[in-house]
Amino acid sequence: MSATVTTARRKKTIVDSEVQGGILRKIALHWVALFFCNTLALMIWLRLFEQPEAGWSEAFQECWTRFLPFFIVTMTLIPAFIWDTLKLTNRFAGPISRLRQALRDAGEGRPVGPLKFRTSDYWAEMADDFNRLIRRIASQEAGARDDSGNGVDAEAAS
Image (tube, one colour):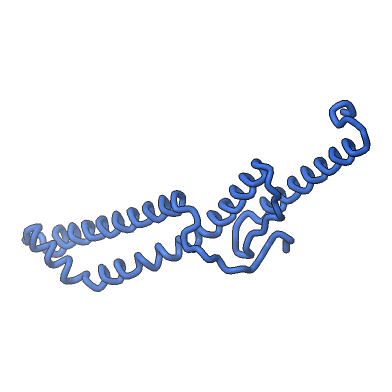
């Protein structure tokens, strides 16, 4: 196991609203499309093969009557699937959010501690790579300070 992994629980449900919101909207849209297409397919099946003499409104009514339990179960599962998808997206949105903040801090010259991702998060290797980079930069900065403190011009030494 990597030294950059933690088991702390996530405090936020939505870490990156733009990314996670986009994914959740897409999942919800797919479920609505699936629900609509299944309803249409069932209604066409009833109309063409089981009740060819019935009109479309009768086929629609029969479809709702016969398949109501299926529709209820489908609609009930949508929030569970969306919640599970949200938890899954936290596994990559959380690490990227922490990396983005650490990069922002480093870019503005603020001290950056080691980056740690949760055990269940994706991309733990990215934290290792980032931490290696930060250590190298800190080492170079310390070397430059030592050179300037000894009366050696860091640029002239290059």
